[in-house]
Length: 290
Ligand code: SF4
Image (cartoon, rainbow, N blue to C red; front, side, top):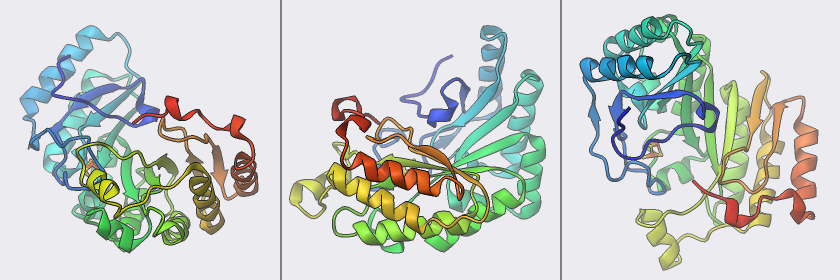
């Protein structure tokens, strides 16, 4: 398989077959994101993707999961995405799940009927980067969507039977918005009803606008104890009515936690609290990565 440029996928898709159905990200403007800066966004043709699927079939005797990249492949219209899901299912009948990265806007542009159609065609999970529950933080990082839009998008996909895995970035508000980012992120986790939540920790990448903000002193990054304090506030404010698996297993995190809200809330809070006083619970800084 030949891939165009760097290819990213969620940690839980580590063993999946990755198929690029789009190249780059159609938004490509978040101030912290270096992932697709060098790619000009485009949609690959059905023929190109179909050829990749057939080639992958020849190379793989068994494929459990497929992941459609790049950054927001869910921006494809239902008319374009449905045949691709169908082709993937037909070529890999053993495949149990097809996942995709998507933005809130991509979901909101689809009707409830279309979301059901995509689910029936095989779409098994959407990975959505909410990044923060704070409207101020989202505005500052040029995220495009508002907290209300993100909550609505997650609700709509989950109601159509498509589980959503939503990521947030610890430290994205910097020191100035630590409290606001933590409280509003916790509230969003409680309100949106996602099946999964993933927590990443901000790592500022060279070449991004956020890198310049750090260099000029406009943005002050959190230290590890502040990230843990933020995590505590996120958890305290995350009052989920429906089960939500929450984890921080991304390579950027120093503390790895995993549990299900609301049942494991006390246990997770306890871990965050203990980690503030026990360095051994933390992944060494040198092992962190994007
Ligand atoms: S964070 Fe997501 S939406 Fe923003 S530029 Fe990166 S890939 Fe695109």
